[in-house]
Length: 128
Length: 363
Image 1 (tube, rainbow over the protein chains, first blue to last red):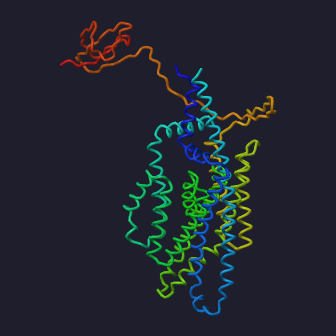
Image 2 (image 1 turned 180 degrees about the vertical axis):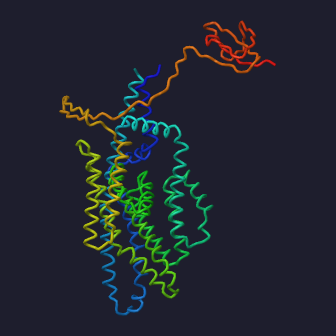
Image 3 (image 1 turned 30 degrees about the vertical axis):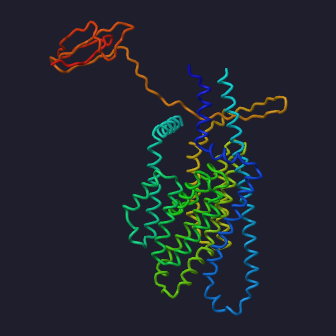
């Protein structure tokens, strides 16, 4: 005889595993601090690459001016500005990443907790 | 309303039954639509401006994840930009890389590729105002980054298309001028900036309002979102002189509310007239629960009850074999013939359904 409640529960579990389950499991295998630190590190790398791409574009944009006024440019000031903009870009992007990945971690953890709760319920049903 | 609910249930049933076929077809159509637009708008590399090539790429997209639609569109755009000018292609590649690294990563949940595709498609159709309402209703605030990606990508390509003639007229020695033209078009595009800001705020507000525990939260969210979007666009227009079409924005916002109602009907169809507010407690908490029943209706199923069926045989002089099977030893395939008898059917003969018929023509 089919147990309807059990079938519904099993379908829910299977559908969760199929959709966001896998990604959420890997997220929840981390400690909160580790997960966020890892993604902050990635954010620093990614923002650095993006900054250099942007900086390359900037150099191309002002190439003619830079070549014309090569001897009049204060390169120290230019470097100082470049570094301060780099720091701002990295810090802002890290803040955004922190918010997004904290939210994702909390959401994934909640989903996995619900999944294990349903799994426990299923195992109780099996024993009955 | 009942008919609509029945139609909705039927659509859902058909989709769940044929999902394996419907999904690839939809993805194919979406990819074909986007790639055709990219190829039609840019189309500077004549080798790539080929229907067969677009069809092959779209076919591949139908079986690959949705992100590949964006990948093919970006590759196609950069190739066309390269045919126009190397400098334009460099800027295009740099911008797409920055968008991918910075924004797409943050919004890159499953389904966000679809948001980018729809943002570009609707922006091309001059109705991008549907996007913030739909995304606020269906997705999370993180999708703001995907919408921004789509808008920036669209505006860059649009700027290249508009200035293609000027870029073509510039000589090889004006490489920096070409590069500056594209970068300026992107950096000083106030319309794009205002739109990104307006959409970001609208998505967040729609998301917050639709999750509130108030009656008709979805409807309130979409109307508030549409009005807020309009206000921000108008203020932006006044401040930066963005030349956003007011009539287009109003029409787009009305359309956005219409689309929002359709989405609500499919995703959040509840009956507010039957709300139940219940209160209970356990050892640790008091619970104040508001339960709103979903609007559902069972799709009508046709059950044919056969009481006495009349079978008419038109064939004259045709010979059939009928067999009578006793209860408990029914044999549907008629291998063991019990008490079989051969009869000849006349012009119109009635055969009771209580006799199981094995229709075998005998020569």
